[in-house]
Each structure stands twice: as structure tokens, then as C-alpha cells.
Image (tube, rainbow, N blue to C red):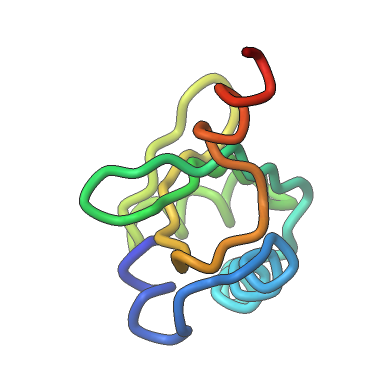
Length: 99
């Protein structure tokens, strides 16, 4: 999934841009039933773990086979690279808030 997002979209600056891109990529397979973005963390890039559900198991299976998305506990999991200008939550923000 991240490869499809990287190829077709610039790095995301906010959750709304990411959500719109995911819905665009998923339109080929089915409608997005639910989508969650978790706080971004830095590895090689700044990336957000995401979980997605489509409107049918058949749509999810097709997406999984074409875009290499893992299914765990009823959700499709993937990472999305985001811009350094990301204005959503990050694991660093969470650490600062807890101190």
C-alpha cells in the first residue's frame, strides 16, 4: 500500500490528505468502511501506522493480494510515509505530553 501511495501522491502533511489518498487507492477494490491513523514515528522516514477496513472481505482480499497489505485481527495494516511537515500527532508529541 505504501508503494502505491508513494508513487501516486506527494508526502502527506496531514491526516485529511492521507485519508483522501487511501480512499483513492482503495476505490479500485471497494469502499473504505473504516480508517485509522496512529501517531507518526521516525525510522528512515517519518511514517504513520494505519489500519483499514473495506466494505467486503472480497475487496480486502483483492487489495491484500495486489498491494501487499497485512491482515491482522480483522484490519488491514500498513505504514504510510508522511512529510516532515506532518501536523498530525507523532510519537515525539506523545512523549512530550506525558512528561
